Length: 79
Image (cartoon, rainbow, N blue to C red):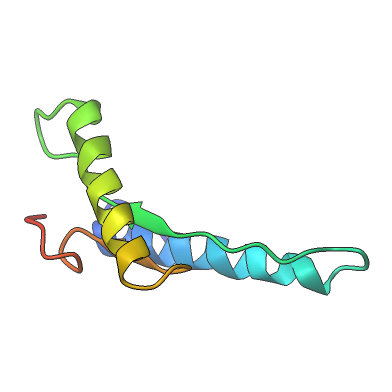
């Protein structure tokens, strides 16, 4: 699946979370968790601004339960 949309990015983020969780299943392995905030780069936008928005989403995720992932829309930010 592509990641051209925020929801596509969310699918990829969830696969990353699942893979990190499976690390604990390996002999001597240790599971890891991750919180992920996703923002889509808008036409004509500087990548830095998109990263700032993704960071805001990440902090929203952390305030609302660690180990999750979300897009701007989930955090109530304009997407």
